[in-house]
Length: 261
Length: 197
Image 1 (cartoon, each protein chain N blue to C red):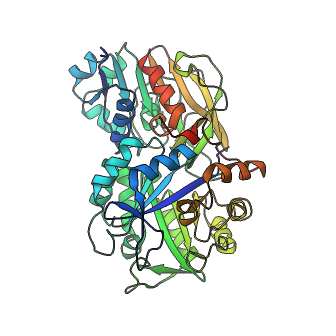
Image 2 (spheres, each protein chain N blue to C red; image 1 turned 180 degrees about the vertical axis):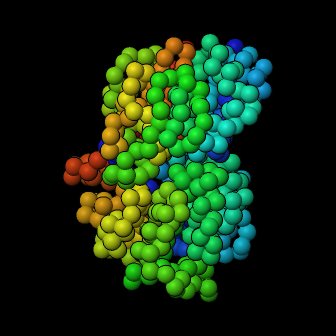
Image 3 (cartoon, each protein chain N blue to C red; image 1 turned 60 degrees about the vertical axis):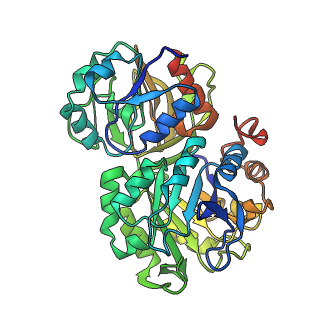
């Protein structure tokens, strides 16, 4: 049986990791490679890098840092932000990413999902979704443009599955940044609507929140940013807590606390 | 310096860079080539690959690699889709694969989720030098929607709705359904074992 996954999300701007707030002032958190290696050594199951400069400025993800990450990382990672064509995705995957995550570009042109799945396989096509009140938001990363997409969340979930997506990252906007827990009801509704692997995002504040979204809402993975970056939750401690609750989790690798070789 | 010459045959999909980097982290250079002469001259051949089976099978035929790969006597390791190509074929796409191992890939059941994506554990069924030092219950990273049923060439199995072949082998031919290049220390061990064959 698969393990549930714990996924730190690193927001990247101009080649460094910045504080996990997608709007306003970006505080520098640290070097991409050093942070990625630390999380991998601590037992992160996968990493997501969100290039927050790429999308608003309508330019492609800078692949130089992706190559640097790929050189040192021996766990899977996904890149989000600024990928709006098969060529963009190809460049990111060729630089060493395992998956690409697409959000607004898929809403603008849903056929992109099929094109990516046909070219690279469904397993690397992740669809990011920003939702509030059961509706789907578009361009959430660009406050001046953010708007309702005109779509119901669950309709879009079913559509991306039928078009060949391989995974869904569900970000519940009203929970995001609150640290009061994931939106269990919305996550549960998506779980019931699709067989695709489901990554819950937004609202993690303590270990119990991870347990709840994995156990009660049926998410396959839980993503978080600020609680990991700040050190408030350490992945080895989190994994021990989840294991003690009987959740199937890949244990922290031996020697993981001393850093990877 | 190593006297090994490791050649990977790029068929289908992207992400060959991860395989290259994983071998480089072990201190082993690796070259990518579809040239039959280069492949034949290798000491170790790797068949990586992600993506769909049909275009990969077609690419093997189009590049004249089917007979080359079938006749290799040196260690050959297929990874993920590359492993499936070592078998007879796949429900995912028409066309005859290499047929070096026995069985055909089938679509995994949609329960609990599909595709099978994430970390899962091995259950070993046969001893193999490829699995030296890798215990039952070791974790590896999987991403796939099709898999080989458990059969005569199964060395270790895994489960996603049904049991399937996670590691296969016969003679010089080996395959793993998971991605050793993305499976942290356990993956490094498997690749190092392959280089020692």
